[in-house]
Length: 404
Image (cartoon, rainbow, N blue to C red; front, top):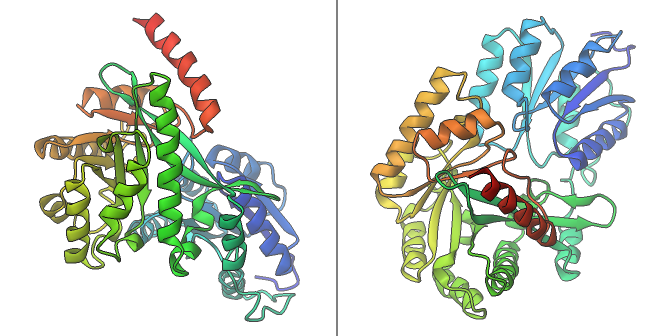
């Protein structure tokens, strides 16, 4: 590539904060032309509108609508010959498989970026392009999106807010529960998703206080909803980094018992991809969590560590099938086969089966037909603040009842 030529970059990501931040990092490194798109369709439009070539494409994998895999398929058909970097928070093995798929399609993938991205990672990408970096990147600049001091201040200032994404019954279409999702209400960037800061929390010993805080806030909100007559459960994500203390079941039990919420209305979601770290200790803690009365869900099933072994040993009550096995299942036979097999597997174990990431009417109808219990995804609703959820639920129930 001509070193005198200014590089042109296109960044695809559905997170507006991430687009702004990565653009800022590239400009710090001397890249002046950075285009952005919030999903695959927008990315295709941006590419088609260019007179000059886009030299480097940074592509997120998990996007609503046209996801990264579909986008890569489209640009391969269009013979895109620029460099590509895959950019995602998905499991490393899955990201590697997507990279291989892109290479098989003839695309020039030169690497992957994990979230949260660091300026040093982008500098390394530019070096692969044999391009000069116009700014010297010293060790103090090679940091993640936020440093630990910023996040500690955010926790002290109570800037972590809960968003709620509904799940519906596949049979009745009634709203049965909500997943509680942390967002940092940043003074500059607005609501920032945990992909951009959770790893820093985990790496700096803050995860236990963080998770307990999220659990308490979520339970307090459920308490209010139950008092209002809403028949709901909640799901709260638990990091595997939390499973480092044997008294964790008591900590979570205390967080719930300080409210009027029955403990069996709280489901803790564990990401299956991390269960291999210290399996015996994890099982000890998780089994005692179940003994306390919590529901226990395997999140992102199928993308991580020893799926069958996980089901065999883990005392779970719920299986959440990852969106990659549901998206576009009506049109892709292989995806449908995997989806159907996963649902049957979960039902055979007597588990509540949730399919997440549903974005279309067709996929919603299919997963219901295949026998899942609950459905979650943008087709139902995006995550929203508590007051927004209450209004949404009222409108949703009116429409649901009028449809019957």
